[in-house]
Image (cartoon, rainbow, N blue to C red):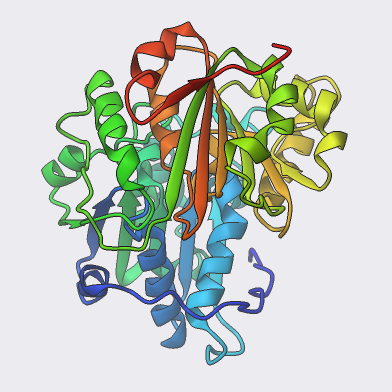
Length: 402
């Protein structure tokens, strides 16, 4: 049996839910998609569903596609359980590929790609799993009363059906998704879920997307052809602070100068440790930056393997460990790819874009934390992004020495 470590102690009170989020908790369909924009509370709803089921003594599996989210989600469940939660809970939180390996290895499946896990799951995986489970049915410890999948836009419907095949009789599968932010282009969409007969619930509003970013976010979404899928969050009356937005023409080479100017860019507001996230579209650029400037950043948390042959198993394992530990430290500067930061946010976000791919800009816009003081978004981009970034609310800055 795969044993999860004990939940971390809750250091903050449970997140209160609004009326729309609370209404979702009362629904009991066997399959359900919760659709919402970044900051609409999808992950909080999943964590609360998990906490409720754990209090009832149910077995819960929480799965995400992004390995860097595992620690974050476990912490959210602990927070929603609070101090009054049961001393022992039957909760398993896994990266999707780890869940698949856990299920397949006891069945001696020769096709499991241990050395290249990103090659799996593929189109053949659901059929292969069905054959395996028919030959060797799931054991009790492989079945769950409630299965929750976060970031479902990165998971195909057939993969989600694989998860559902390990439910206990009468169990439930609940998936959250912002289908504008999928990384692979073939994940679950709202239309696909509806055609499969899944009830779809939309969470309105966003507690994260700053009002100043909504026009440019919509413009980028239109450029991506997301008019039908894009969610325009309702205006939630929150005490948003001021958001300063800048774009700087260039590439990762400007970051050395940018770091020294974060103070002026935030209008003198103190940038406390842990309030800065430097996010790269290109993993190679992130690794180079880390080697050249990592020591100067002080305490950092990152998702990269800093050295070694990147094609070796050792290098991939180092990177995997970095991603698994990501999000677990306080008072650090986070350095990550844009995709690996999903589920996290920061008060000062620096996006480093290398191409004209508007989807990475779109995802990065939603990583700025709601702040009562001054939040800052800095986009470092080449000329190809100029048309979008010259539009309001961005102002262009030139860094000395670049």
